[in-house]
Image 1 (cartoon, rainbow, N blue to C red):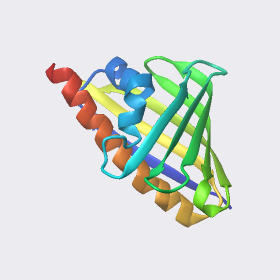
Image 2 (cartoon, one colour):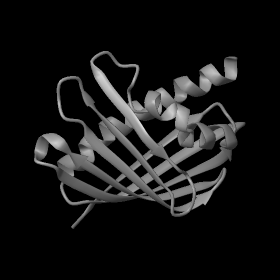
Image 3 (cartoon, rainbow, N blue to C red):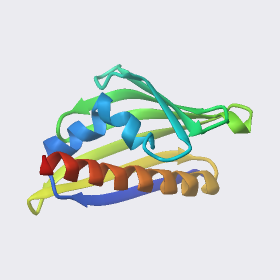
Image 4 (cartoon, one colour):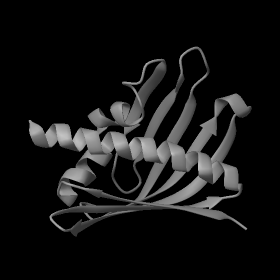
Length: 151
């Protein structure tokens, strides 16, 4: 048995704007928590195209960082992204979580309905931990979109 994570958020921005902010190299550090006190983020690579890879290393100061890798299989701007997601957890002897993620960006009510489905969690607690992390990520995405819209 595996567990699934599903998150929906409505953003007050076009699908193009939400897709671009989600995929943008310059935004990746912020989205992964670079502006949080005591948190380090190193964006190594962002190549959002079919066959492309994004790699981010992140974690609390003074600790070996975790490494997130996304390998993109579908890039249909501004409608859909699909990628193989891998998170190497440094503090857990390098244990790696591998999942599949589908993100859709649907034009709805003058904004965008963002839906993310992540499948393949073998442990319910892992899924729940990712729910917390993705929720923070999407809150940051909302603030980033508002900042971009206001400028």
